Length: 301
Image (cartoon, rainbow, N blue to C red; front, side, top):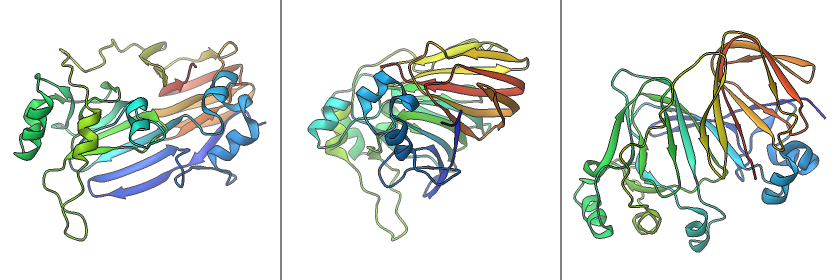
């Protein structure tokens, strides 16, 4: 078995910008290794050696995370994702909890995450109908290094000028709430999912939806811990040894900035910003050198 795997991204050009699917086990949208093997085929072959024993029992032959880079040239639609229970009721295999880490942004870039005021389901319907739903949403100016957790049920939208990494459950279930009256390439208004979205929204209001942390060099900083993924950020200027000997999970490293050398159980490679690497659950350690910033994500079942 290889010490690590790198994949050819799937790049999608959309009405609002581009998505680069770095690691995907989504049906009909699977990423391939450099040798042409699909991600889920790799899981079927290596099973718990790749993803970990507990994860293989929980997720079977489907890789549990979808990793993307999103480059927004225009505002994305206002949207929401269902949780697992709601998705099952709606005939979907699972819901979608996700997180964003801003890699770069235009000076005026912003995004929406969560409700800033209490509204009822009836008021939600009215605000969608009269084009005022954005008035009820918490809006954030963003910069590189900002992090947002988006549990299923939270209304959100990425704004123009954001370039970010997205980590999420393996799911492509998105319910479009509002789309600024945009039209598709055929001149038709883009489809909204008003009923499904209404069944999925969490109406709780929080004082702050940003993940607040103090940026530090040369140490691991945990950003998000949830049932679907744990994610930390490393901003390294010095060599480091990361011990994975007690971790019963695969690890995905997502390059954010810079270039470094990674040595996984003695096998060495160059790791750059914009790249992602899948490290099997059997890995014992990763040694780093160079100036490199990356996200580390894995699943604890």
